[in-house]
Structures are given as structure tokens and as C-alpha cells.
Length: 190
Image (cartoon, rainbow, N blue to C red):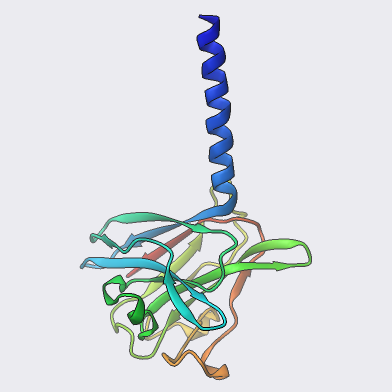
């Protein structure tokens, strides 16, 4: 009996260490589909210097009223959540509603820079919302935002305005949450 207890304790310590190590490099995007139709979502990263779009997550359908949790790398940069995974990697550059995010650090503080981009020519009936989650990992002090194709820029969190994604005037500054790892709730059709 004593040997079983020791084995169990060693196994529990190993599992706890593995779970902590995994959490140290990731945070979660909790994606909700409030639209009346299925959304196929995927996370891409844009690699520099060639601006190559690469899948970070598996394309997945989210039924209306359902949610999906996608773990993403905390130190990843150039990341974007797309609601049009059905377009494939090449379609990642098409006009669409995006949650864009990536690692940022400043004067020893770490966190995530993020914005919502509802480009000209994106779906006219799909808005997006982003809420940093207060779940023991977040601070509750980071900006939330909701954008629709007809109303977003006034919130100051509109990213790419133009599908060219190249002109200096097409982008607005990101919001930065220098509070360490924070999970996010992202809602389509908020």
C-alpha cells in the first residue's frame, strides 16, 4: 500500500509539472459563434520577412450558439483569428473580420497587443467583440471592444481598414495589455 501511494504521488507531481509547463507558453482564445450560421475558424500567423501566412490551429466549424477554445502561443507574433477558414491559407489575405494579436513587451512588462480589423469588403452583417477574461490569468484592467462594419473606428481599436494591409494610413494602433498571459473571449455577431 505504501508503494502505491508513493507511485501515485510521483505521478501526480509529474502531471502537475507537465500541465504548468504547457500553460506557461499558451493562453486561450474562447471563440463564440452568436451568428445564425456556421462559422469556420482558424488561427494564422504571418511570418516575416516574406509575409507568409501559416496555419497555427486546425480549421474548425462552430455551430450557431456554440463555442470553441483554441490554445495559442503566448510568445507568438503576427497572429490572426479568421472566421473564414474555408478560404484556406491563400484566402487569409481576403477582406474579412479578424481578431489580430501577438506578444509584446515593454520595460520588463509582458502581454498581448490586439485589435479587431473589419476591412472594407468584409461580410457586411458580421461584427466582432473581444473581452480579456478575468479568470485568474487576466487582470481585469485590459480594454474590451465591439466592432461592426458600420461602427468600429470610434472605439479606437480598429486595425486594418483596407484589405491591401500595406499603406500606413490603413492601420490603427493596437491595444496592448501588459498584464502577462490573459485569455480572451472573442464573439462573432455580438
